[in-house]
Amino acid sequence: MKLHDYLKDKGSVLLVNAAGLFFLSLFLRLSAVRTGDILIICIFWFLILTIWLAADFYRSRKHFCHLFTLLAELDQSYLISEVMEASPRLTDRLYREIIRSSNRSVIEKIHALEDCQRDYKEYIEQWIHEVKLPLTAARLLCENQPCQEDRKLLLELGKIEKKVDQVLFYARMEHAYQDYLIHPVNLRKTVLTAIAENKAYFIQSAMQIDFALPEEPPVIVSTDEKWVVFLLGQVFANSIKYCRKEGALVRIYVQRGKQKLTLIVEDNGLGIPAEDLGRIFDKGFTGKNGRTGAKSTGIGLYLCKRLCDKLGIGLSCESVEGQFTRILFTFPDSDFQKI
Image 1 (cartoon, rainbow, N blue to C red):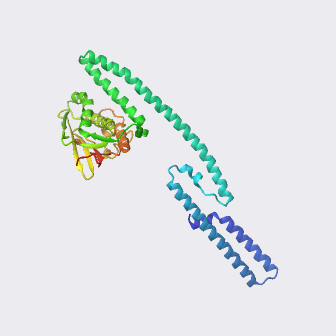
Image 2 (cartoon, rainbow, N blue to C red):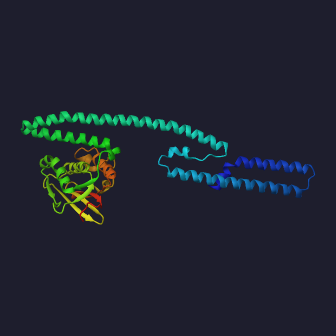
C-alpha cells in the first residue's frame, strides 16, 4: 500500500474535514473570536487529523501486507478468506463474508469438475483395457497364419496398441505416483525391453542400433522400468519417424557425471531446427518437421517431459538440423548406482 494511494482513497474524509474546518473558522470569526485563537484551533484540528491518518495508514498497511504474505504462501489462493484474521472494521468483516461465500461456490464447482474428470478418467481407462482385447485377438490371428499381408497388419496393429498405451499413460499422468514403484532397475535390461517392443519398426525402417550399455558392471538406477520403457518407446518412435532414408542409425549409451547418470538416445535423422528446439516439449507443438514430413500430434515428447518430472528424471534435447538429434535422460545419483 502506497501513501498517495491511501490519501486518494481518503479524499472524501479530507474534503469533509477541510469543509468543516473552514465553516468553523468562519463561524468563530463572525463571533468575534481572535484570529490567533482560530489559528490554534486549526493547528490542533490538523494535528489530530494527521495523527489519526498516520495511525490508520500504518495499521492498514500492516494488515494488508500480512494478507498478501498469507496469499503468497497458500497453495490454493482462493482459500485466503479462511485464514484471514477478524478485523474490527465493519467493511472488512463484510468483505470477508462476501469472499467466503464466493469461495464456497468456487470450491463446490471445483469438486463437481473433479468428480466429472475422475469419472471420465475411469471410463477412459476401462475403455482402453477393453479395446486391447480385440487388438490382442487380431494379433494372435495374424501370428497364427503368417503371410506378407499379415506382417504388415501386425505392424499397424502395433502402432494402434502404442497409441492406446499413450492414451492410458496420459490419463494416468496426473496421478502417476499411484502407478509406479521406485526401486533399483538394471538400465541395460530396461532399454533392451524397449528395443524389443519396437524391433519390428526398426527393421521396417532399416535403422541400425548401436547399443553401448555394458553388461558388467551393471548400470543400476532408481526408477520404474515400466515407465522408462514407455518413455524410450516415445523417443524411438520419433527417431524412426524422422530417420533418413539410407544409413539410419540410433546410438544408445550412458555418460556418468557428478552425482548423476545420463542415458542418451542419439539418431542421425533429420534433426530439429534451431528455432524449434526450445519448444519441442510443449503440448501440441509439431514444429517444422511435423508439418512438412510425417504427421505428428505433438503429444509424445510433451508426455515424456511431464512423466519425467513426476519420476524425477531430467529430460533435455540437443540437435543440429540435418545431422543428429540427441535425447538425454538424466537419473539422479542414488545408492544403487555403481559409480
